[in-house]
Length: 339
Image (cartoon, rainbow, N blue to C red; front, side, top):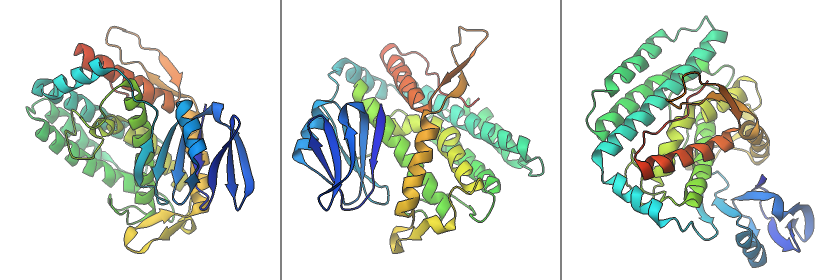
């Protein structure tokens, strides 16, 4: 199963038989078998016919709509999961302060450990760059986690260690594209643009997976409730930010896959990838998301944990199902840890 990214402005997605046609000015650009699609992402000024919408819904294929700059606007989804029992359990866990606290600690611990691992892997290949001060700060954060008794205090640790981590991230960025600090809404430099875009993509993927399983994606245990924010998806994103998107961004930048000429300034809207660069980005993103990645199972009952090879996209589904068991059975959550 593949994902279709539509970025060519002015195109139209149509249906013909069991196939989807991408047309522009009444000329067929590409034909795709709809039965081989998992999802469709539409960026900017692209139309989709009613017949194509009906076909995608009937085939259970979700469509996500984003601005041409990558801002998520909404989704066209088939009938949501009927797993009301999971949602009832989710609401109960949300009201359980002890459950939310332990889950928050677990997620932040995983995020810190994954950040440390990425820094250490980079440091191994670049021994002349000193990260000792940052690694010590992150280690202090890990030790302080166990003493926290409120989710808000855990979020404080997450904020402090993330700030330290991004100081290291700037040192890991080589070449013409520099990174000084994290900026959002809008991103103020190319690297921040890549980070924000990547986080949006994996958040959208996780949102779809959670909805398909039967979760209410707007009720999170770490991020809590904020009107219109898919907090549960953002909860799981935390364990994947550093090993997936940050690592991917470093590869794009440090291997000169993307350079300064691949970005443009949209006045007050910030810095974004050009249309051509975005197409290149998706080619590398799909390769990264589908290639095998090794990790250790965190099953506490297994003494010798073998390396498991799978893709990040499969891992997203694995972690979502782990969360389902955690919510339904009140079992400890086992986050993904970077190998």
